[in-house]
Image 1 (cartoon, one colour):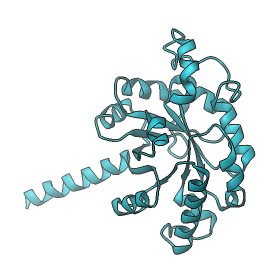
Image 2 (cartoon, one colour):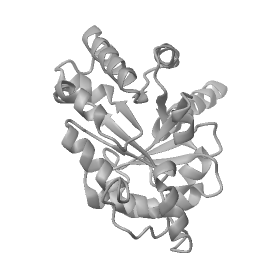
Image 3 (cartoon, one colour):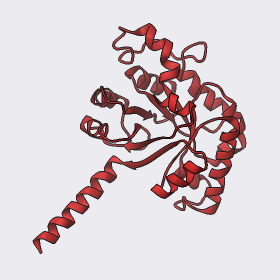
Image 4 (cartoon, one colour):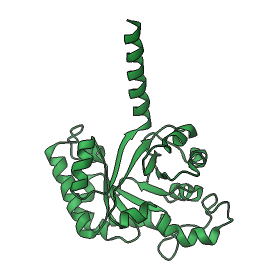
Length: 251
């Protein structure tokens, strides 16, 4: 369970999914990732594709996290009621936006989530059990990915009810006018400042890692959540390498 690992200071690592074919999820669930991050923001994987993709993951120990297109109550509700294990909410720039995400994700009295966990409760056969345990089993991760959030970061981190924060380096770099230099010293300094504030607030922090070396470095710095790699990259890298081998064999 992701929340258990986060609360005990353990690292978790996942990979991005941008293709809607359930077979992609079924195959990737056979890997050693803690979670798959289905991207509903940029790919995007629409909400109506989620059911089949979640079914493909059934029986696996790999958690399925979904990134909604925006911090929207209706989008969040659909994903949760379909039974995702967690949510990424992008572009959280204020305490009010953080609170809105919590309210949409948590049942009363912690939030304002509407009652109707369709597939999440095994088609209403375990309503009480699901609702009693949803706070512990559904992981809510807020993305800090714009420098506009930085003056309000202490207020964001003080909001109760979410499980972790996550830095989006590309958007953060863009908001600083430095894209595509995601490893620019100013960007790395900002990431370090966010990390310091998260550690002070006791909030687990994650990042989309650029390399295995960066994973090691940031883990030593206290980061707990990492994403690395993407389904389309595996396909491109694999086909490129295979085609090269085949061409070399022909010659």
